[in-house]
Image 1: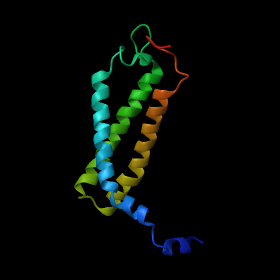
Image 2: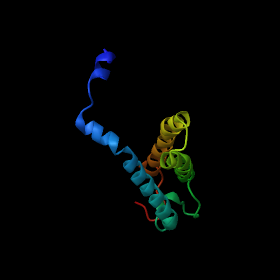
Image 3: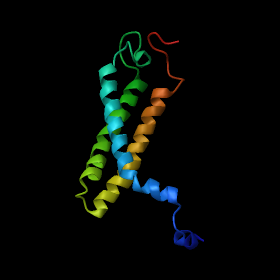
Length: 127
């Protein structure tokens, strides 16, 4: 049963991965900040042509994609702060790292699915 699984020591590779969780989280947060920064700088009809219709307005699915991306980034901020500072009680840290992280992951996945859905209408310069 499950009791026998908990008595066994963890494999060495898994212990190593558990030891580097915080550096991976910091690196991931920095990469997301870079993604937000560069996407904001490049956001135009010439670069993101599939987001814009012929009138220059955003498609509705593109607005939702941007909304989920921004909302996911906003949810990421308290998660990253709680990880960096470590001043929170165990319950607050657990809530942020578990529940808010899963919520943020669902927002990020929705953002990616809306961005890459091939059934979306083609915009300027798209084939």
